[in-house]
Amino acid sequence: MVFPYRLYLVVSELACKGKNILQVVESAVRGGVDLVQFRDNEMDETDFAMTTIALQHLLNKYNVPLIVNDRWDIAKGLNAYGVHVGKSDNSPGIIKQVWPDCNCVGYSIEYEEQINSDEAKKADYLGICPVFTKTGSLMEWGIEGIRWIRSQTNKPLAAIGNINMANVKEVVKAGVNCIAVMSSICSAKDPEKAAALLRNEIEIANLA
Image (cartoon, rainbow, N blue to C red):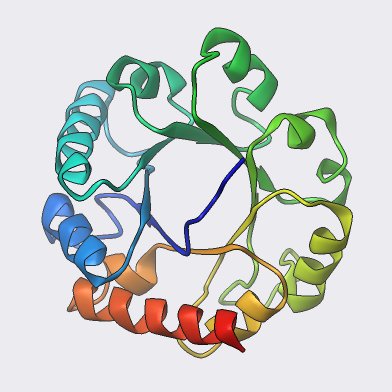
């Protein structure tokens, strides 16, 4: 599939730290975010659905696609762009069976054995998760992990996990198509500026 996205915002109400989630997302889009995923495990089903509707309406104005985490039923009902799942969620294969018109199904890769699985092959893009952790634990891919995944697949890759201004260029150069961030933008005092700075670094890295 064509996957032209460079800066992918993963947003939740908690990550926004008291700021209005719609205002954060709109600011981020103005700063250069070109793909948004709504992921919030704390909201009840009604609030989640209502927030998804509001995000879809907002993003339609900017022609920015909305990805919904796991809840393919809500995404399908809104005709959102797609859905993102992990190993413990509904699989890409099942989602494509129940929602054959879905534009995009993303799948998180957390372990080496997933990369050549049937589910990874059925996904439209793969999320490398996490690239880094704040504790530097063994459960992170790191730069060499990205390079290894890139050697195993031609699918579009989106990297997430403690990516910031200090390491974003290195991550891009390792072979990913897209950088996904949450706190670096959602928790920033100025989400638009944070997004613009990250987007600029991504573009520079892609030109190098």
